[in-house]
Image (tube, rainbow, N blue to C red; front, side):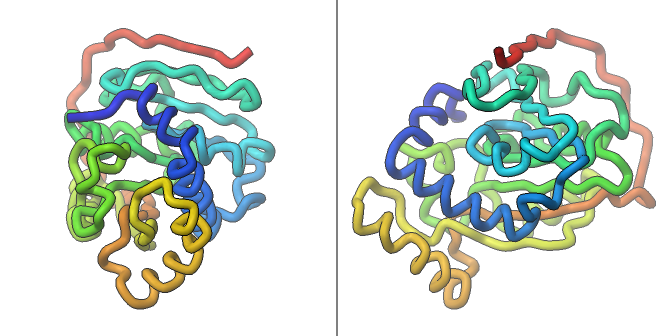
Length: 238
C-alpha cells in the first residue's frame, strides 16, 4: 500500500509533519550545507517539496518529479521550479544531466526499486551525488500507518546498501533520524532536538528513517535494457 501526494501534503501541513520537516532538514543540511549546492542542478524525486527550498535559491536548476503511483501535485506557490509526473523507469531527462538528487518518499513506494535507482543513476552526472531518505524497518515510524513513513516498503540500512550496490551506487555516508515518536503532542515537539541527539548517540539503529548518501560506481556500469517511452505530464509553477 502506498500513500498519495494529497495525503503526504496534509501530513506535512500538520504539527507532526512540520516537526518532521524541521528535524529532517537539520540532518539533510549536515550532508549538504545550504550554500553547498550553489551553481549545481538539483532534482527532488518522490515528495521532496518540504526540503528543496533549502537549496533552491542557489542552484542553477531545481526540478521535482513524482512517480505516477503517487499522483501529481503542483509545487508550493513560493517555489519556482518545474514539477513533473513521470514513470519511475523513464525520467524525462538526458543522461548525465543532474548534479544532485534528493530521494524522499520515493523508494518505499516504488513498484521496482532497482529500476528506479538505475534510472536515477542514468541521469546523475559521474561526479554527482544521491541523498536518499527511506523508512527504517527497525524504527517505530515504519509501523505507524497514519504517516507517510508507515506506507510502502521499509528498509534496514543494510538492505539499502545492498540495493544501492545492485543499482551501481556506492554508499559513502549513512545515518538515521526521527527518534521522536509520531504524534501531535506539543511536549514531544519541544523535545524533538533532545530526542534526536539522544537517539543518535544511544539508539542509532532505531531511528525512524535511514539516510544514505551515495555516488555512482562507474566501474560497475553495465548497459541497461531500453524502455519504451510512455506518458509524461508536466506541471509548471506560475
